[in-house]
Length: 494
Image (tube, rainbow, N blue to C red):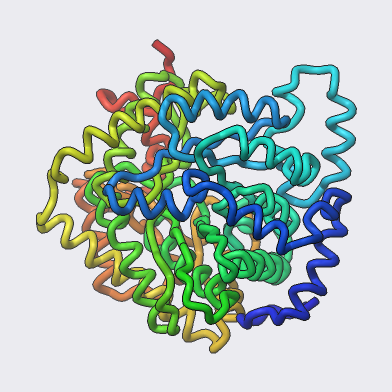
């Protein structure tokens, strides 16, 4: 196994040597020893269960796939829930595994399942324990639905999760080498995470090069009040890591880049449309021309109102933004997002609201099409991303090493994260329109033009005050919790 991080494709020998180690991490790993048999299983799935075919359809129709997240501790519960979501219009299901699976604690899961077996089934774990369930049982889930499923893996041990979920027919893999670390952990070695995700990317290539298309979703850092250019810069450089593990065959690779919708319609739509353009720009510079790049728009990652009506209003508003933004996928939240893991009713209401809003928005032109505001948002966003990505790439000729150096130097940074691998000097705030701007740039390598743009936008909101402060930031974190008829935040349930 390669121990150092370098952005080079794992050789066949390196990949299969590491695979022996990966499959030994838990006893169900023996079920995927025959990798070619797993490829054959995925290739034989109908197009309705292949995420790549559904992404093709969504792009062609101009309507994003509506995907809820649904992770339950047993196969039977998962089937029961997701058949409901399928019937109310979900185009695919995002299946998060439980917290212990995310870090490879399979023995802990086995013990918890035994200790809690007499309790309520839905309270066994906080997600779908893919590795402990095993490929055979997960295939029973795949075969019960007529729509695709995708694996919401991640954090710091994704390898066996990817092996077993792909073999079980989960034809999209959601993870991020940076976000899986810095969003959830304080000091887990970043080099180790990057190396493990190289293995997963090489595994995806094994399937894709043999005709089994797997969509790779690059997960951003999903912090509260996400600064769009930082998320996209991360996705671009991680996309380069993914593409370095792909072979030289002519089959296209499906790459979906993350966007967390922030609530301002103009900014969200402009960024959503610009992400594939800026992604292709860099991938083609590195010689990757067989990659199909799209945007996946995820609904707001921060606090939701307890009132279910207001929660669904956010769902609808952001589904409209994703539709007008030409996203391939919109990942939606439930009506009970603020106070519990979504139940069947809350999840179904979220799906129904999103599907209906998508259909309505797709029949109407975007109201800000061709405006100066849209042009400015698009222009500044692209300039911001280029500043950050170009500087990252200047730090080292090897992209993986450059990423590590960028994190230490503050060239890449993000607010509100628990990690010590980033400086954490950057801060965000909203302008008078609700768009997310840079309040404190830390050490980001941005030009005077960009910094002046953000200052001017925030000054418009500050009005007669000298500047915004951290009270404003705290208010902005609760932006969607407010009753927008009043200034104060509220969580009153009507």
